[in-house]
Image (cartoon, rainbow, N blue to C red; front, top):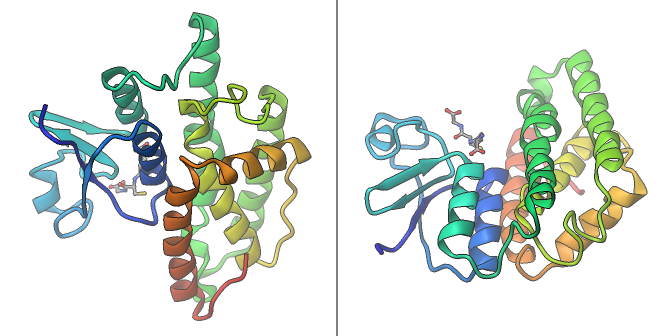
Length: 222
Ligand SMILES: N[C@@H](CCC(=O)N[C@@H](CS)C(=O)NCC(=O)O)C(=O)O
């Protein structure tokens, strides 16, 4: 098999998700920045969607982090990251999709609000409130012990570390005290301490801190 190539950048939480799975499975992978940036014609010639992350292995070109990590879990089966019977696996997939479709979008809606010159207080307030409502919903649908599938890291966990970090950054940027259920704080801490998560999260955090500092014109403590 050709060596996998991951098109990515450091600030993307979805790239962080894929890096966690690569690390957990000890998969050697070359990383490249998209030529001329994501969305460019040069990059679309390689990856038609123009999005990151993208995984290229020989003729296989995959976009969408969920498709990528599920492929990695099937092609490199050890350690299994979607364990259990059909019902357990479906629950884990649900929690992974919840991250992508419900928890992360309110933060994405705040990207354009970080620079003080382009800020609309009602958009900021609505999306911080929605993010907190989604954290509360996560606490109702999940029972982290301490991770979503129990002691072992699963695919369901891997999107959350970067989003919790970004959520704390967004709250700090807008001077807001984030309301996070204690069970989700425990999940966040267990993720941050996991050896397959910590290096990828540190890399994403450093890029996120630089992004906030550029937008705000000053370093942000969070
Ligand atoms: N649903 C996608 C989300 C990834 C995503 O939002 N990527 C952004 C960068 S963080 C992107 O490529 N944006 C370019 C675009 O949407 O054209 C996934 O899970 O991979």
